[in-house]
Image 1 (cartoon, rainbow over the protein chains, first blue to last red):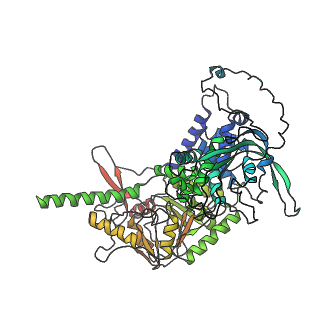
Image 2: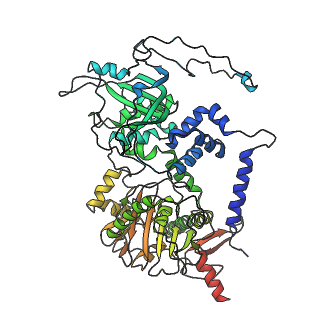
Image 3: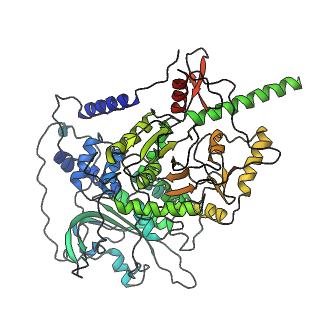
Length: 362
Length: 278
C-alpha cells in the first residue's frame, strides 16, 4: 500500500547539514579564510560585488566561501543582504577624471596626456600554466615606475575628443533625480540611466555574449576603445543638513569609454558616438562588453535600424540579471506534479481520440 | 522568532509600497500593477512574489498555511512556511479551514474558502499574453484596449488542431468582465473555484515585478466558445487513499511495470476525509 511521502522537513535539515560538510571539504586541508579569498581571489570578489551591486569586498569574499565558490550563489547572498540595508540617499556622481589610476589604456591614441599605464593585467601574458605556483613562494617585487610629469592630469579621452566636437557630448546632469531599478520596476521603453544600471549588475557572461554579437554583425557599432581606466575614486555625499559634499570613502571601479562611429544626419554634423561601461572592481571584460551593449541599445535614439537582440532593450534588460535567470531556470526542479498531470491527461485523451479516429477509418 | 530582521522580514517602507500596489490591484481586478519587487532570501521563480505579498499582509494574529502542488509537505512549502515562522513568529497550520492566509503554488485548496481568508498565489509569468507576444510594450497596449483577439485565435487554433483547447493549466480567465488574467499555473480544474470566491485572492510575481488581485465575490470567467464551452479535467478513479471523487488527483508511479495510482493533490483535504472516515 502506497503511503504519501512525509518528512520533507527532516530531509531539508539533513540536506543543509550535508551541504555545510561538503562546503568545508577535507578537514585535513586547512580552511580558507575570508581574507585569503579577498586578497587572492580578488577578481572573483570584484565580480560578486559588481553583480551583487554592493561594494564590500569582505562580504563578497564571505559569500564566496559560503557559496563554495559558486559566483551566482554568492551574488545571490550579497543581493539578499543588500536588500535589507537602509538607503539614505544617492552619492554625487563619481568623477572618474580624478581617478587614482591603477591602469589606463587607450586604443585610439598612441600617447596622450597621462600616458598609457598598463598596471596589473593578463594582457600579453602567455597563458602557460605556471607550475611553480603550485608551491608557495613570494613573487618578485614589481618595479616602481618613474612618475610622468603629466601624471597628475589624465583627462578622459572622450573629453579630449569632445573639445573639438568630434564626439557627441556626454549627457548633461540636469538635476532630474535618477531612476533606481532596485526601487522602481523597469518600465519599457526605459531611459539610458535605467539601462546602464541594469547592465552594471547584469551577468558578465550574458553581457559579454551580447557585446560580442554586435561585433559579429548583429547590430554593428564600429567600436574603438577610447579608454579603459581602472583605479579608485572618491565617493561623495551631500547630507541634507550640511548642504555640501562630504567624502564617504573610495571605491575601485573600471570604466570603459567606447568610441563608436556615426554618420551624422541633416541636423547633426558627423561625430563619434559613445558607449559606456562602469563596474565595481577590476573587470575590463565586463566594462567593455557593457559599453558595447549600451551603444547597441542606443540604436533607436540614433535612428539606426533595430534588428538585433543586443539592440532590443526588453530582450537585453529582462534577461541580463543572473539571479532572475538562475531562479527561474532552476525553479523547474520544483515539483510540477499537478501541471504535468493536467498535460498527461490531455495527451492521453488526444491519443485515445487519435486511435479511435484511425480505427473508424479502417 | 528572529530579532535581527523586521516582523515578516521586509522593512515597513517596503511593506507600505507593496500594500499600495495591492490596494490598486484590488481596485482594478485582474490588472497587473508594477511594483518594486525586492531581492528575497529565496530564489526568483521559487515564490518571491507570493512571499512579498504574504509578508506585506501578515499580522501577528494571522494563521498561515503554505502549499505547493496542493501539499503542505513539499520542500518549497516547508521552506516558505518556516521562513515566516522564523521571521514573523506567526502560527502556522496545514488545515485550510484554520488558515487566515494561504500561500499557494499551482493549486487552490479543495475545501471551499470563506470570507476573511486570503489566498496568495505565487506567479511565475503574470502576463497571460506573454507567449503570444513577448513584448511588454505591446501586451500593455493590448490590455489597455482590451484587445484579446489574439488569445481567442490561439484557443481556436487549439480546437482546429486537436479538437480541444489544449491549455490544461494557467488557463486564461476574464476578471470582472474586463481584464484577461493568468490564474498562475494552477490546473484549469481550479479555475471555477476563483469565480465568486468569498476569499480575497492576491497574486505576486517577484521576478516579473507585478501584483494583481481578484477581490471577493468577483466574476472570473474562463475563456471559451459557445460551441466549445470550458470544461475541467475529470478523473475516472477516486483517490486511492481517501476515496474522494471530484478532487484533483496526482498520479503516482508505484512500480516499473506500469503500476499507477491516483491520490489527492490536496494533502489536507485528503487527510481530513480519512480522519472523518475513522
